[in-house]
Image (cartoon, rainbow, N blue to C red; front, side, top):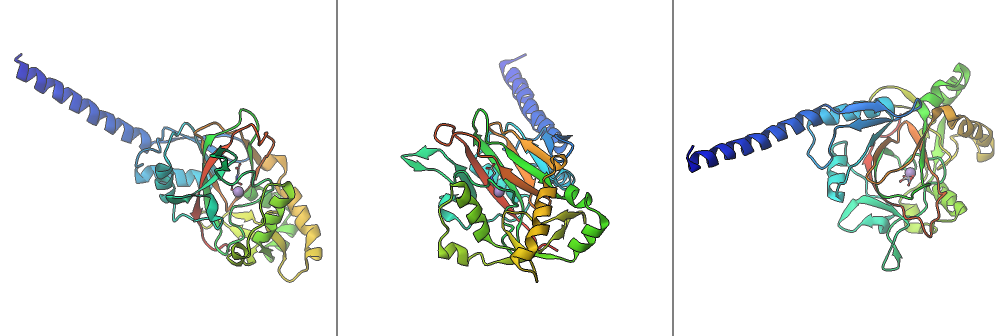
Length: 313
Ligand code: OGA
Ligand code: MN
């Protein structure tokens, strides 16, 4: 073989190898493996690499798995904020959070949840979500789902708990379901603020922030727009009262629902590893951030995108 021939051959082999690799990757990422993580909810998606522009079929499979399992876990994703945003956009428009001081300056779709300090200043919103809630439920159009990328997590502690509200609704008696099907709930962001101030982390919201978030009304039971399945939709995060009833009158039934909704059978508790991506469905789940780590010494640094959703019905 001449030198020219051998160079040509090696070029072909290398070219062949790399295109074969691309094909293999595509074939692999087109067939994600879905594995349930708990009886209550959640599925791990294997064989996907979020640094890549995933095929439409893969996104469709993930969407189906999300609708069926309410939460997706994708491990070992060392992605940039840009890749996080690009992946998130495949599922819809993204929200820009009202608390603008916690957004990445060049990429406002990313909300930073962090207790890590840089130049003496805390890099994000610290210690939030220590009460059962669904993200942006206080908006007329709450979020479809949130996609969190764990960048740094404590060795132990700082888990997030999730509660399946399809299961909660389905476990109620016919009588209670009929009653709830006819009720609407008033939600207000100020209540979420109150919850956070109670646990000692949040600053009071400004008048400006509260003006952007007037009280809203949603059905107490919402129908999942993609599957038609019904979920209980009254979390203590921002619910005030039933429409047409006082807070005092509403309280006994709301408190019953809050208790019922977090029966251990409906729960999954996620222990975070660095580079976990968790995509949770805000239409069918509530979640709770357990603040049981030492905020002074245990670093927890997360990025969250929030996919826009529809008006609940
Ligand atoms: C959130 C939230 C959970 C957590 O980002 O919406 O509630 O564990 N955080 O940080
Ligand atoms: Mn939340």
